[in-house]
Length: 400
Ligand code: PMP
Image 1 (cartoon, helix red, strand yellow):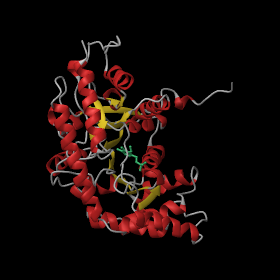
Image 2 (tube, protein in one colour):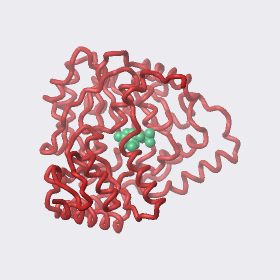
Image 3 (cartoon, rainbow, N blue to C red):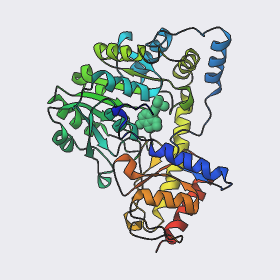
Image 4 (tube, rainbow, N blue to C red):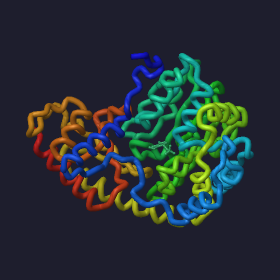
């Protein structure tokens, strides 16, 4: 067979996608799977957003778009940054992409050279490290320990930055822990970054609207305006507006970086689906009240899941203030054996046995850079959450 590119060496299917596929396989065999592995809202896309897409398609908005995004969407993004983040970006400092994921890919592809380092606050979203590797860079992890509520310490960050550091990636509220970054922490992180002017800073704010307990979200370019000319502020409509399948993300950043990323995009996608862009405009410019209502619903599901998990001997679950994930610690379960004779040496063994023996789909902490944990998404209904936690409790009780 003709060969493949070396850059794909070590790049695998993401663990959450692998888990979702395995769960689907078991479902097809007739098993009743409790799916807690998927990272997307269970709410539907709002009607006014769908209507805008239908109107765009019917109205002939079907030609090639400008590759950096339709002017009307860029204006909606500009207004969003100003309204919600007090960030003033010119239109040529804004880029629209096929989801936040493509924005992150464009940014690293446009900047990373072989040997560059990309610093990740760990645990981190699986794709960051694989995208860095695809772009020839080396992911470097800064542990954010569970006992600190998975917060990033400025001291640990400072120690991780070297002359080779190209990017620092921030993602609070965080996938997979749900951890948030209070303003005081962000100020300390910013003070460290001011000392290292060779480092680009990317903040992935995709979970901005999923925050609880009156936590106040902040983003680094707003907290420290002196960093703004090296910060890429990344966001998208997927999580806030329940639009994961529409594939629209966006960012604001320094003009030259945006131009380089646009160049990448021009040679790979020629821009974003026009109909999805019309939908994204409706999402950003339409009613915003439901965001708070949905966050309140997620908060009560969080309370339910954290409460149920902490009742299970052998599980310790922190209470996150954002996103829709919990990241319980399961060290006490390792070294044990399941009723079907599986030995649990790692959190990957734990989640696979939990799926095969109790039909609960979740994702191992190892995939996010920190073990022994597993990630549960609570973006699903309460009955499913209760049933999932009941099965997890039964599973753990059955280990010997
Ligand atoms: N960033 C994080 C932290 C995520 O968890 C996800 C989705 N799992 C994304 C980005 C991807 O967002 P999008 O759908 O806009 O590509």
